[in-house]
Image 1 (spheres, one colour):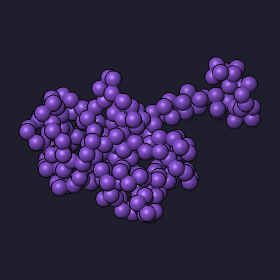
Image 2 (cartoon, rainbow, N blue to C red; image 1 turned 135 degrees about the vertical axis):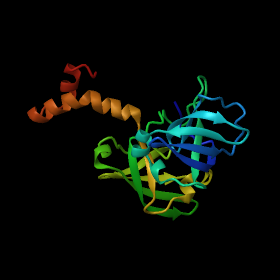
Image 3 (tube, helix red, strand yellow; image 1 turned 30 degrees about the vertical axis):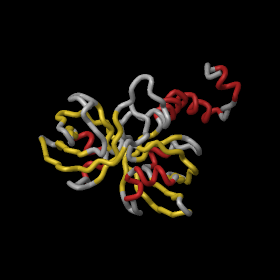
Image 4 (spheres, rainbow, N blue to C red; image 1 turned 60 degrees about the vertical axis):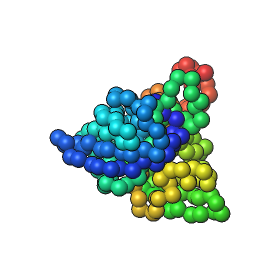
Length: 217
């Protein structure tokens, strides 16, 4: 489990094909002497398992499923990625609960500077747009961010200077692809409510009383 608060940018030092997947080696900007084989590290929002740890780099496997679901299939040696080590019990949860299980790939539509701030507009698959809500949380390349506005299957973000400087956001430009993880609470609530919403749509009776009758209040 992660928070979406990025610890720093790491550099991909090697990418080696392996039985339909990849072995990736990354050099983090922070000390990894406390990282052990088997530890989880979020790399651009993808939960990977350390299989080898050296003084300055670690290696992880990227499965065929992960390649299909994420932007790892487009990565090259020398690219930069956001890194976050897994949450410890008792740590402050400054972002939101991020599982490291990417739901799909989004595309940067626009990046507009506003003084020292930046406004991003990002498009996601229509199948994921149902979970978007204004002021809700979303993980973009592993970064915990707040949705500023929802426009059909796109959403707007307002990025503060600190987040822009310490993450790969400063490297993004229109047309770039990013990993998207929908807020897990939004997904759970939608799944629980879906059967009742379908019934209510048929009868046009969605109301507070309807939700109370079905145990939501």
